[in-house]
Image (cartoon, rainbow over all chains, first blue to last red):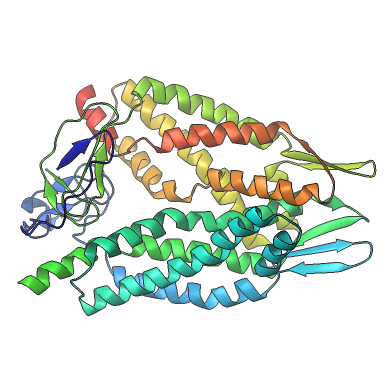
Length: 222
Length: 197
């Protein structure tokens, strides 16, 4: 175990084998972290916090797959349908996520355009491809690059929530811009689809059990 | 004994000093951290956060002015407008991630820490609240909402005169408070409970 107030760093992959809770026949409570002895094997709930006990998340891969596929399907309308409809006296303008980015770019807010492009387009794409890649590699039983894959998964888990940014922007604009005849803003159907994509990818990431990445190593070496 | 939440490797439990954390030797994930804040400090922060939360929702975020006409909206009003327009999914999503979940999280955390301070940790209700907080935690998105407010404000300056409202400052303070509250490793609650007994 590495101690330290700051990140103490990780030693370069040592050759020694690690003992996991599963090897020892122990169950770890996912909710409170309690390591339950072999006697707990027959129990279905954590003796400390009463959360359901399982060695690995139940049906992890299957749930990740289905949520991921749903997210990928919804990603199409999320990008094609307008997220925001602006009506003024003279015209009505429907903006998709990409045209919103283009608007910022052409009106001189390149920094803002880059921010929105990153969280609304890059992050969801990165998230879905990473989860796809992870789910595939675990299914193949890949035993290489665990460190990189674990790190990728970690990044995806942390940044995923920030994709919600555009949904919040739309919600605020709709609430604020209400000048009866002069200008009003409405949320488009794309906003709902996009929100659903973010929620589905977050659920997919939560269903994925990171320990599966490391389990393959063991099984292949045996 | 403690197992790494990300690779399942077993480690021996090690006492830590305030603010320290330890990482897994195999995958580098954080195993647990000793929070910088004590139970009393957390109680103070949680109470403040709840008060600021009320202010953030009761006052308008910004006031817009165009040709003498001005409009303003609070966060709950924005949600209601979305709902009235038939955007139920977006309205529910925004209400849940910026109002319902953060409020529940803060209230239940306050209840948990009050129970700890009173030495009543470990009752059936304590464990139930603990599990709810663990589940809800990833879905509270105040900090993302704060950034969204910034983006919306910049967008709106093209359209109208923008006057910042009370809630804008309240959300700024709330974001800082929530980041501090969330940095408390929930698993440490059980260590606190053991020592309280």
